[in-house]
Image 1 (tube, one colour):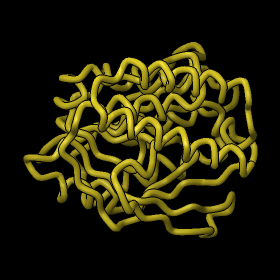
Image 2 (cartoon, rainbow, N blue to C red):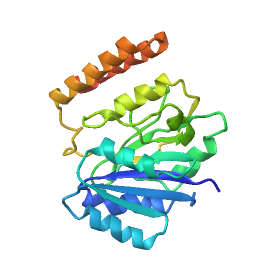
Image 3 (tube, rainbow, N blue to C red):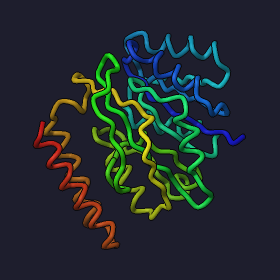
Length: 243
């Protein structure tokens, strides 16, 4: 089988972490490298990750000082040995066929596969099922399976030291003109947490994000990429205005 590396950045999600890890351990696709990056958690998250490592040899745990979600994901990429990469946030969880469904769609010509997601509340009750209608609809790194050589060829990493870093990662990925496939499948369960860093409006972080997007727009030489950036900015402004 082909090894797939699943990277999970962790920070103070002790209440939900075991649910997340258990959903990965129980995947129908078994040839996994499960990389848990404890980003300086101050709760029991690090200990929970260590305990799971003793239960399953596919799990690798790395502890670091708190550097942010982007840095944790980048560390995970450094340790990834698989031919394909997936990301899962530590307060979310996946259906048992999450990896196998995406892998089955990852034909030789595809650089990544994009699926939808199911929005759930803190108790796991379904709020909505979301399906991708076009390739630039979602900017989250989860809900995708990436070909590792594609990420390496285009030096795709997460910008560190800022919020909404996944938007810039996605812009850089789309600018690389990937071959992709979207699936009408919502096997990633995204927990809507009112206390998360992205749930509350942060105007300072928004300002930094839009400044970075304007810079990318000025630097872009492709009309297609410029249109993608403008469209993303328009959608983000609507999204932030609704908060």
